Image (cartoon, rainbow, N blue to C red; front, side, top):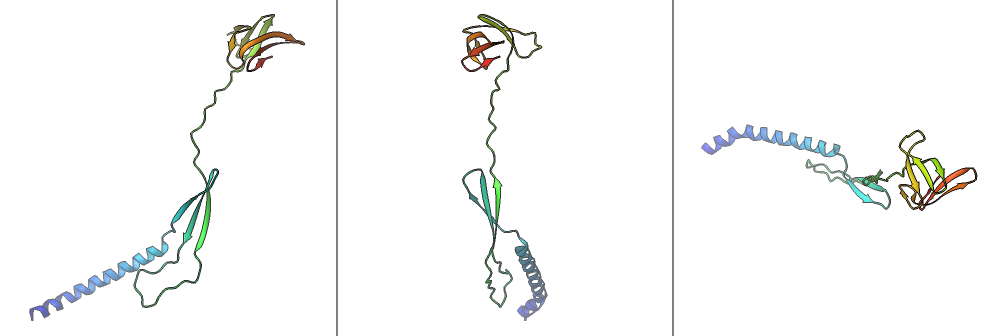
Length: 153
């Protein structure tokens, strides 16, 4: 009789627990249906990647007496994305020189037409941007400082 009393007393608790389990299973099924599809990255040559998103048919978690079958094909969405760029490449800018004055065998240059910081050059000197000076000569109406990597007019 003691076992019968214990079984009768725990019946409402068991019913309450079963109701809570049923409620949680329903919530879980709703979350399962509203969850976003998973994505799998697919690499492509070049600077693009493609991500294929496939939506799989979902079966309910809550047990049912009917089997769930889907005759529809899963939907696929392809998303193109730019790959991350590598670190920027720093390029050293060539200095710009202005020919301020010249005479046979020598010249004076500066970094601007108004700069008072003049640099005197002779054949054989090196100057950033034009390399080693190979000639300082008059061409037509202008003087030219010719270097191994460029010239100043």
